[in-house]
Every structure is written in structure tokens, then in C-alpha cells.
Length: 129
Image 1 (spheres, one colour):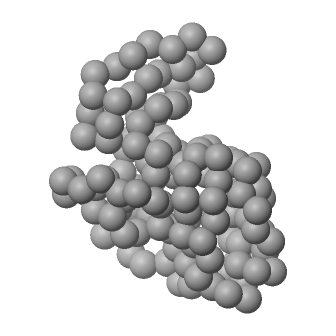
Image 2 (image 1 turned 180 degrees about the vertical axis):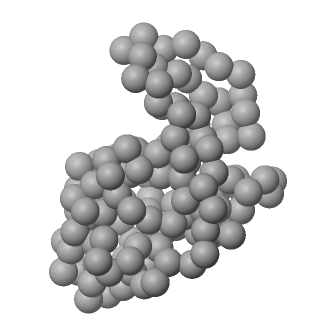
């Protein structure tokens, strides 16, 4: 896909593609966008959430909360991105670290905190309020 370099934003250097997705930026944000594009339901928490709300931090990983009823779809999305985790492990452990092709991911399975949508490129990501 042809890439057009866009200016550096608070989310890091970005490129657009013909599909309209942001493809290169801080890896935790890119990972959240990819999971969202694959239909995973989650809320971003931790330092990535703080950054998406405007705090000047550079997160090293993506932390998300997933409702137990959404684990199957979330697990499928993680596996599509190269992560090795079973739905049973997510439900049993409820606090799981997964390495994906897009970077490290920490998954917390519980009721999601209150959130608000944050627009990143052409997508909206649910971010803890």
C-alpha cells in the first residue's frame, strides 16, 4: 500500500494508507487501532490511556480491560496479530501479558471502567475516563 508521511503528532510519527488507517506511530496506539479494526471490544487504561487523554508520557506497552463476555472475540483479534494466548487462559488468569507483532499487551479481564471515545486517525478508541 502506498504510504504518505504525515506530520508528527502527539501520538508519534504517522503515515496514512489507502485504507485510511494510521499504520506507524507509537506501537501501543497502533496496537489498539489494530485490535479495534479486528472487532475487539476493550477499554484502554494505563499510560497509553493517559497519553490519549493528553498527558505527556511515552507508553511502552498497551494495557486494556476486557469484559469476560468479550474474551472470545478479543482473543481471536490478539491471535490474528501474532499473540499466543487462549481464551481459557484469559478467563482463568484475568491478568495476562501477551507479546504481539505490534508490541507488548497487558490484558485485564473484568468489568470495564467508565470510558470515552478518543479519535485517532479515522478510528475511535475507548479510553478510560
